[in-house]
Image (tube, rainbow, N blue to C red):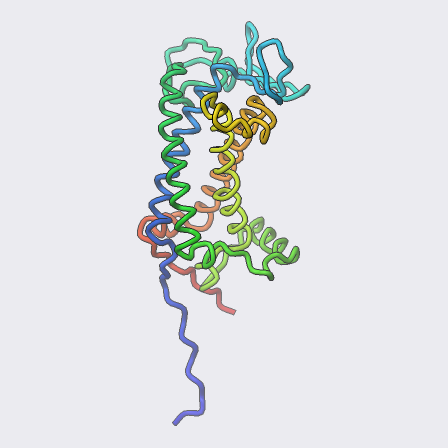
Length: 277
């Protein structure tokens, strides 16, 4: 018999990383949020100004305005103003016709201005998002996804640990081996923020803007400081989701898009090999 211990068993080349409910919700939510954003921009085009408080109209002081003059488009936030001709406020469509909507037609649903159609698209997919999020949150809690994948352990709350993860992402140093099959602290915090904060906030502020809901739940107006404040928070949360989406796509491209997308389609994730010492 040999006195030499056998070599340690290498980690499996693939792990089952994403279960079916996660994959279904991921792709349905991707389409849903895209439609909600584009139809929401159509609704915003009807009055491209944001206020704080209960009331707001054309002659009131708005904290954000996307508008146009006779020859330029502009974005104004508070006292800061920048020209946005060709992008926001004043732009030219595919037929060479100048338009003065806040957001261009290629970014909205429908592409031509129709507030009624924009609202139909938005309200339908808002219910899709709300029901999907409710079911996913229940599965996350009951099915063990929260405890297994998203639970932040005590050691991960260490500022040193978080700073280390930030530096690794900034240097594009992604986990290898078995560590790649688990969520890092930044992933956990971002997913928790989206699932349990941003998406519920979008739903709650959306309901606050509904006069029908206000009649049955007037406390929502008090909670968010008025209908116009709810509209502003809704707008900010929407662009926070856009920022999350852009960072998410960038990380997927840098980490290996084929492996990442395949894992979200099939569930199976190929573990990147450890570097030789």
